[in-house]
Image 1 (cartoon, rainbow, N blue to C red):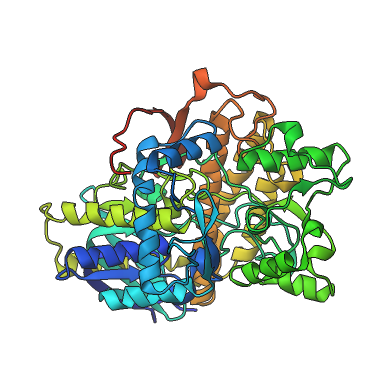
Image 2: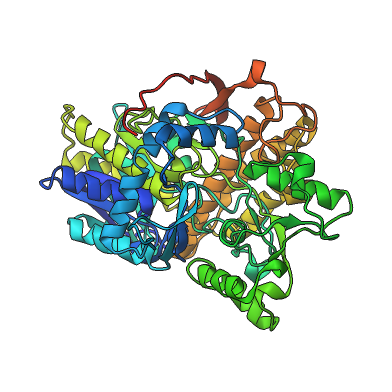
Length: 568
């Protein structure tokens, strides 16, 4: 395909939100409500009505402060789950916005169940039940009502940085031969985390049956890295404990109908390992398998018919594939236990801690750029409402900073910048030979699975294998220049693959640097098997040096401390 046919367009907005998920939509709505005179634009790779992690719905709000819980108790819980190392300031400010975000969803029309006292029906200490299959259309409707503009099916590829400040983003349509430079006074990145870096659980056509949204490919991380942003905690990968084959959430069973994890002998085993946290429950399951007592299950055979029916209803709101499996097997949940397994690792700041290094206002280290949701690091356990709370914080900070004096950019300057960027961004369309995005991604996943702690190695890593990964990823990075594309869809896939390769390189450097084992399965070193708070109760951060094509790793101290809990 010739690239000369591509239309180039410069657009302007006051606030640009990249990504139309929970954080992005709430950031846009907050910005419009904060100043209705501002133009706010949301740029979304898919379609905001059914995009990202919430596309299939939810059956619970997993971050909510039920009676007896406070923002401080939520921080204590998150710190315990994450083995003592989180950004306390980020988790606390996020927790303070959980309940108002939940109320907002209810006001928008999300069906949240209530008890006789009018309180949301609790599923656990920090969660409430929801019939949330339509959560994304409901949020998209609120976004449209706010007056924000939406550019659907447009893929952000690079930040536009001028005079040391982020001034917009370069982006390509995923369906038309059209490339944009969207100029903005403030840019809020909410693109989500990264899937598809490691070899997935299922092969072939079922490869996208995974825990995390397969279309979240780390664009925000990669754009930030190429622009020189500081990132944190890429070594703390997230690995979900899921139902085998369908990769459905186990929390729907464990918390929803409360049955235990058992091994192949029918024995409850978590107590053997003192497993309480999410990674510990996964590690205990792997240990049972290694001891010859696997596979392991959630024992739904203990359910009565009423609870079994309730479980099916809950899955219909979020993960209907497991119902299709039961139907195919002509079985009910109470007929037999549900087998469980670990997923492939994901790089994600909403469950793990990987992402932009931000301040309490979610300002990144790049002036003019803010980050919220899965793409922001240091604050796990966000889920829907935590991501919304971060979107609100980012929008409020952006509004407060809008008064900063910016040198105007002329139409000619913007056009010249877009034309120069188009030469590099559209390059795969002119390649006559090289690699397809799919072929290069398979190579990437094989490297990461075998040498950087994938499923096949029980998620554990050691320096010799990581050094192999580093070497092989360097070759892959060189081959990125040979990616081919025939149409806008291929071009999107080519940029997604390039982004994943860069992110994988950062992950490996972080895994090499942290010489302890802090998080079971998520970050576990065979050569440094013990947790070492004296040396490693700190954050591993990094920047990508474009000129040297190297990842520069640094350390930042953990700064816990006393906080004002009066807001609870």
